[in-house]
Length: 83
Image 1 (cartoon, rainbow, N blue to C red):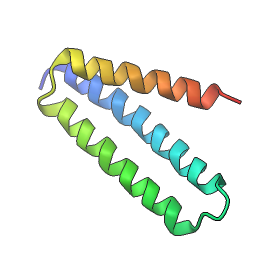
Image 2 (image 1 turned 30 degrees about the vertical axis):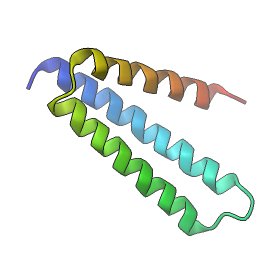
Image 3 (image 1 turned 45 degrees about the horizontal axis):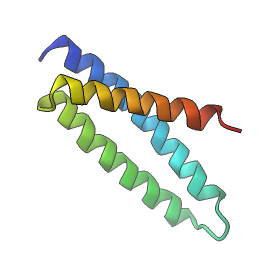
Image 4 (image 1 turned 90 degrees about the vertical axis):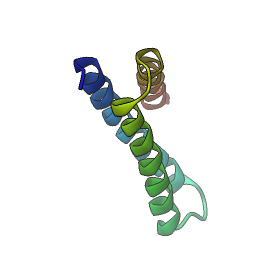
């Protein structure tokens, strides 16, 4: 496996996990949300992050992979620094 794939996969994985946690926190903060809703949001987020992470690691071209990493980094930055 190429070095850039390992780095891009790792960066996207970390950013994706942060995004899943942010999504779970937003679901938890909604009125009338239940524990099952938070768990469901977490599982869906983890599946999406897992599929994209495997795609980056195995077959996505470098431009697409780095674009996903950059978009995730920007989203994490703006969602965590907002407020």
